[in-house]
Image (cartoon, rainbow, N blue to C red; front, top):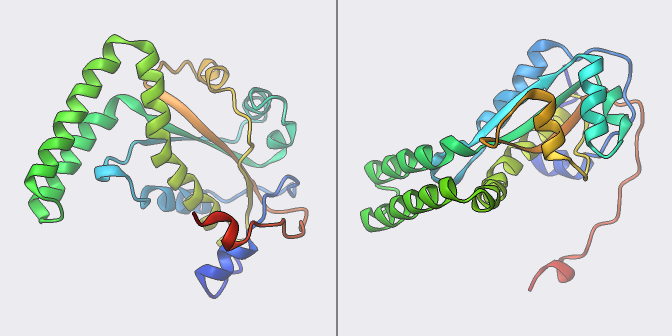
Length: 211
């Protein structure tokens, strides 16, 4: 259904942030394929600490766009995917994932015990201190960002355009859906069929990014 670039390198180099979309719905089967791409993302200790909310309702999309500091182009996309950190389940799932790594021989038992002890300690501290809980949410968000990248590449591979708006009001988004602190919004993706073909943007040289 998409153009399917021949190589991953081509896919990465040809992707653009799209802010103008055709008035054309995204089929449900494609949305499921994007979520499958997110589901297959790697994560620390295979904890998979992510939750996703797919939005198609125009009113809700507009509310979400306003929470992006009025980046209203996001409301014109046929769908939005809100990518969140599953904070409460992260530590428990991380412990289970560490045990799985030990059973498979992928991690030494001593390393696994260190990971488990650290996770339990951090969970106890976070439960008693709201600021630590918020800080931990930000750390978990790194895992979600990997899934966001998978969604964007999968969308591009299917002829869809996407944009990850830079500014996000996580508390405003949580209020829209009545989420508590256990669900931490990390990113909103606006996704649809492109109505523009932006030129490539500049990239830093290898020399600039290697230290």
